[in-house]
Image (cartoon, rainbow, N blue to C red; front, side, top):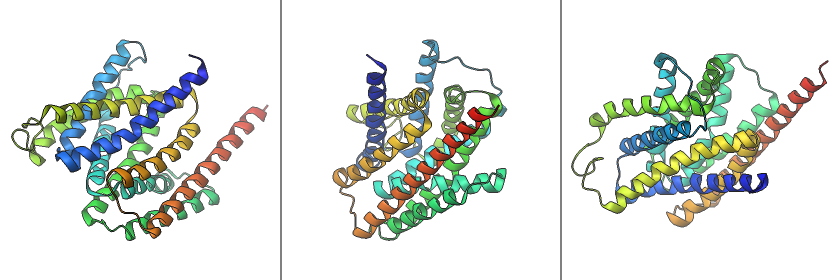
Length: 306
């Protein structure tokens, strides 16, 4: 298979896995009532097993890290996955997807306040349609849930912190995302293993070791494998193309997932919600365009420098 063929295959795997994981998790929560934290634990465990297999096959080399160096990341990793899944469980797929778009404005705020990073005015202005679109969609969502929005808000805050910390830690420790995740996943699994008995049943009806049917067990394991495939394909796509290609591809997935939510789960969509979605999408596209221009400009200056 040529390079173009491999790239197309990688993008298709990521597209299928990213969309499947949202719908499959929503199905497990809504139709089967599978416990949220327990499903997250399954995802973490399968991700670590998958990464262990990858390093055994020579896909990457683990780097020795101290547990204290990874602990804040492992905690935020737990938080962002748990709250994001709770948001998916409690909201429509449209509201869930749009809430995730708020990660970009929150990251800009965190980097500006905590790290003193400055952003051009045009970048800041793109955050207005993103925020306005999310507000419009939430306000006119007939299935609006206060608890769902609380989970979505916490998910956005913790995800933003996690993404900022990941970037900083990768630079500080000189590791790539797979090397970092190789340590995070088992540490996060251990944390959840301790927390789950306080919030969810472990045995019996509704527990992770409850009387689930074979088809339910297969779907849970499949969900974990797909979650790992999403992480692996993201790493492969960025490694073989660029973060920009992955982000532009992400906009396409965003639209497909919203459409799928309406078709599969009969999520209602009003005209005002449609305007909110369009507003957010235009803001995301503008943000990506300006960031692209900024990166190209930086590269040109480095090349021209004597």
